[in-house]
Image (cartoon, rainbow, N blue to C red; front, side):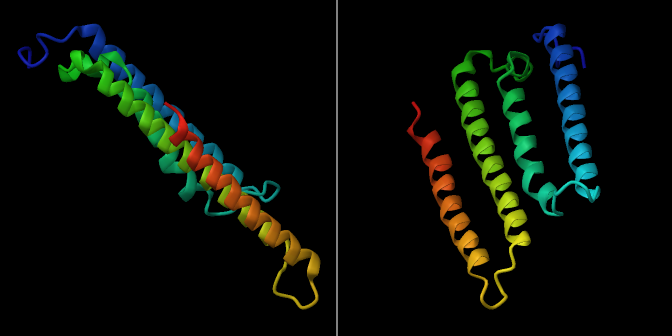
Length: 151
């Protein structure tokens, strides 16, 4: 075991271990709070919230861990800093875009749930439904195109 970690500074292993533990605790606290808010009837979180936001939040935490120097030292890839930072940035952008689109879908679900578009002569509900669908498509277009345009 000593030969495996002989070239790696002990501080890097400790730093990475503590950071991963902190990120896992933050992740589980975030999921716990979202689940509690979803079960409480006074809050308007539908059941599908956890499925839509859990993985993107986890990927955001992973992108932060990938960017850490201690991970590169642990893997013995200290000279590959550029690629780790680029991969971390791309993963963060991908996860954040996914998270924003997921939150938008949840908001759409809440708004549509409040408007009954299936009844006859309900022009106002159908108008809100159509406006929100158009707004959703515009926001998704902007959220997807905006990160692609960055250098």
